[in-house]
Image (cartoon, rainbow, N blue to C red; front, side, top):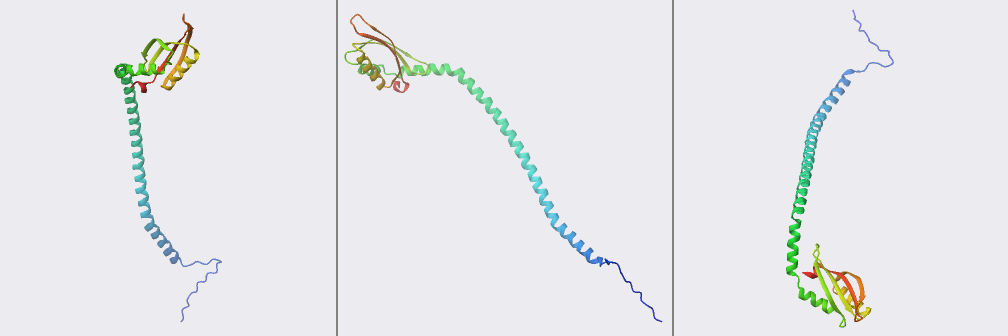
Length: 190
């Protein structure tokens, strides 16, 4: 007798396919994903750890900068305080040095050379200012206004500055008496 083999016909519109091929494809894809994903994950974790270390370092550096700026402000304030306390002593020493180093003979010689021949100095009152400049008040006798203007022009040529005529009058002999204030620069003094 013959045994008949049963024939299994699938008449569906989408017949079943061999699942082994799909399981194999899924397994290979999973293995490739694991092989690629593991080093990528490891690298990601390393860089994340490094990024956290860098952030911590930046935070520490910012704190150090802030502390340094605060210390700098404290030291600047202390320096300013010390400078204010010692400024009077420094000014006194500078004025002593200035008085010792000033050549009065050279100064008076320059002043005499700037005078026109027919004019003369009646009075002279020098004073050293706080900014190490020589302030002068002069009373000059001149025969006329042209001689006075010539004297002022000569003073400007000798680097006198802040020249001001503060008053004028005629004396009993008919000479023009002029009160002049001026300043002599520090560079010329030393």
